[in-house]
Image (tube, each protein chain N blue to C red):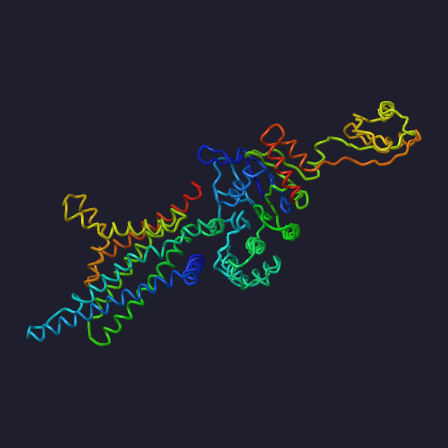
Length: 332
Length: 255
C-alpha cells in the first residue's frame, strides 16, 4: 500500500526527513512514533502529495506521488494536525463540499455524508456551524472528512491531540474499527496510543528511521530470549542469596542470573534464558525440588518506552526527548 | 469542470455568510447612488440653464453623463476589488484549509479558476446593482443602449483583470491586510500608468503607458468596442491567473 524508498526532505539547509525507507502492507494499522519535530508531519505531507520529496520515491497504492498525484490523492483520506475546517460552514454542508472535491459521484454524496456522520457520531450537530463546535467535535468532523470517499489509505496526523481522555478513548476505538476496511497510518508522540491501537510501529527521530517492527516484536527485541522474575521463600530465611544463585545456575539453558533483592523472607532473581530456550518449567522444578516455596514467577515484558529509549539511546538528546515522551505517557 | 463549479459555489457562499459581501454591496450601492443622483441633477440643471439662455441644447447624453458615470463605477471598483479578492487564498493559508484543497484530487488551476470565478460573479452582482440606476435613466429618457452595453463590457473586463491580479496577490500571503494593500496599490499604479507618457515619450514610456487600465477602459466607456482593448484585458487576466497557478504550485516547494 505504501512503498517509501530513500525518502529525504530538505527545507533550505535543514533536513527534516533523512533517507527513510519503509513498506506498509494493505489492511495494516501502523503507528508513526517520534518526539515532536522528528519529521512525522513532513513525512505524512510527502505521502499526501502536499509536499514533494527532495529525494527518493514514494508510491501509494501503486502510484508515484510525483508522476500521478491525482490517483494518489484519490486513494488517500488525510487528517492534518489541525483539522482543515471552514469555520463558517455547517457540518453537513462542509462534508458535502469535501465529498465533491474528493470526487465522490454525485449520486453517492448524500449516502457517504450520512455514513461518515454516523460513524463519527456527528448526527446531532449536522446543522451546527463548525465555528460553534467544541474541539472534540471538530476533530471528529476532521476524521469524517477523511473517510468520505472511502479511501484505501487513511493518514491521520496526531488524531488524538488536544482531546480529553474520554474523547481520546472514543477516537482510538473508532480508528481500530476503521482498520478493517482501510490501511491506517497514524502519527503520535504518545507511546501507549501506539501500543493500544497499532499493529506495527515505525519510530523516527531527528528525521531518521530508528526502528520498524510489529509492536510485539519490538517489545521482545529488547531481550532476545525468554526472561523471567523468580520470587520464592527460602528455607526459613537461612539461605544465603549466593547459595541460591548456585542452585539456579544449574538450570539447563540458563544464560544469566541476577539477584535483585530480598523481601519478607523471600528472594528475588531475574533469570534470562539462552536464545530459543525455555527455562520456566526447569526453574520452577529447581525451586520446588529443594523444598522452597515458589511465591511468584512472571515473564518480563518491556514497554515501548524502553524500546524507544534503547533505539534512540545512542543519542543523549534523543533520550531526553524520550524522557519527555515517558512523562507525557504518564500524564495520559 | 465540476470541481471548478464546486470551488466557485463554496467561495460565493462564504462571501455571503461573512459580512464582507454586505459591506461591499452596501457601500457600492450608496456611493454610486450618490454619484448618480448628483450627476443626473447637475446635468439637468445645465441643460435647463442652457435652454433658458436660448442656447441650442444639443448635448450628447452618453458622452457628458453616462460615460462619466461608467468611469465612476470603475473607480469605485478600484477600491472594492481588493476587498473581494483578499481572502481567496490568504484565509485558506492562515487557517490551514489550503492543505485540504491541495491534498484533494483536484488540479491547481481548478482551484484558482473556481475562486476567481466566484470573485467575478460577485463583482458582476455589483454591476447589476449599478445597472438599476441606468434602468431608471432608460425609463425616463432615451439614451442609446448599445454604448451602455459596451461600457458595461468594459467594466466587466476591467473587473476580470483586476480580480485576477488580486487573486494572485492573495496566493502570496496569509495576511489579508497585506493582500488588500498590495492589490490596491498595484491596481492604482496600473490605473494611472499612462501618466508617464505626460512626462516622457520614449519607447519605455509607451510600453508602460500601454499597461494603463484606464486608457483601455476609456474606449469602452465612450462606446467604442475595439479588439485591441479586449485582447489587452484578456491577456492581462490570463497572465495573472497563470501566475496564481504557478504561485499555488510553488507553495509546495517553498513551505
